Amino acid sequence: MKGLLVSGFTAIGIGTGAMLTLHAEAGLDPLHSVISEYAFQESGWLLPASLTLFAVGSALIAEAMRRTGVNRWIVGLLLAWGASMFLIGAFPTDPPGLPLSLSGGIHRYAAFAAFLMMPVAGLLLVKSRIRYAKAMKVLCALALGALVLVVIPYVVRMFGIPLTNDDIPAGLTQRAVVVTELGVLALAGLSMLRHSLVGRPVVRQA
Image (tube, rainbow, N blue to C red; front, side, top):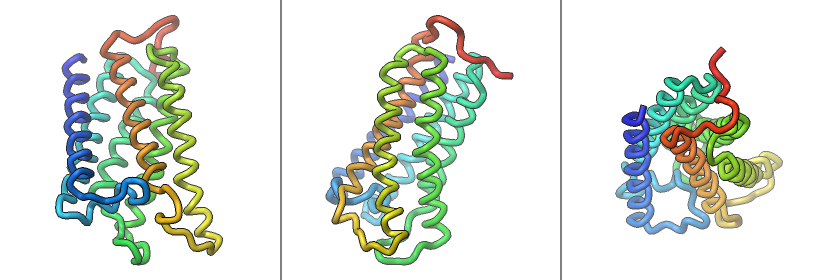
């Protein structure tokens, strides 16, 4: 199990490094530019590479949890989050100003699904009273709060109100979701690495 967790953390760490490198080289405004826009930069290939590494890391941590008997809903949510990360990278969004395409639609809804699934998985782990439960609960709350802020502009546009990312800190709120969810994933892995359970055991598979 330890090998799976270490490999998972390695994948997440390399993916984070690739994401930071992309941000440094692209030179876009992180306050207003959403992460998807970085795919159109010269080093844009780093975006799907980073997201794929996040997906691999999540799958490895999920497998470690499965082997210890963690609730299968939690394992399934982590796997689904990883699959969504892969889809986000494999199906790029549309360039600014163009109508929503099939690729852009898959990208958008996979992102929303991922942003929702990780906090749910984290809150289920909190109920299992794992180590770092308090920190995970805070991160989940922050992730869900940031997700609401991400969704609001889309709802506003549905009512025909013109609103661009330059008008709001769209990049900041999206990054808040990503960072907090990676934090939840990291704490989930650490809880297994440190023989996390305190009190009653993790809810077993049915």
